[in-house]
Image (cartoon, rainbow, N blue to C red; front, side, top):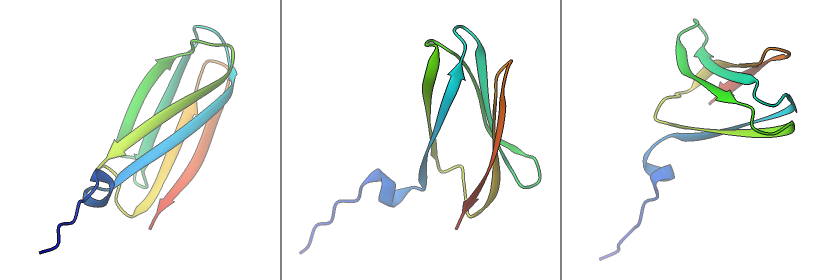
Length: 88
């Protein structure tokens, strides 16, 4: 008999998306929205900038993304960023 252990990463599609925001203004609101190719929002969350300068936001999505094309939009009152995300 062989016993295999399966990590959660093997059992579920887990994606860890890191967003590094360099222009943080203290107490500013920072919004992150991930949507699919037709505009359906998969993830949306607002954060408050707690430190000036560099801020790292770590988004872990479990079982929400399948193979396809996504848009990652991140914005504050002073900056806006957009990136394409392709999952095979």
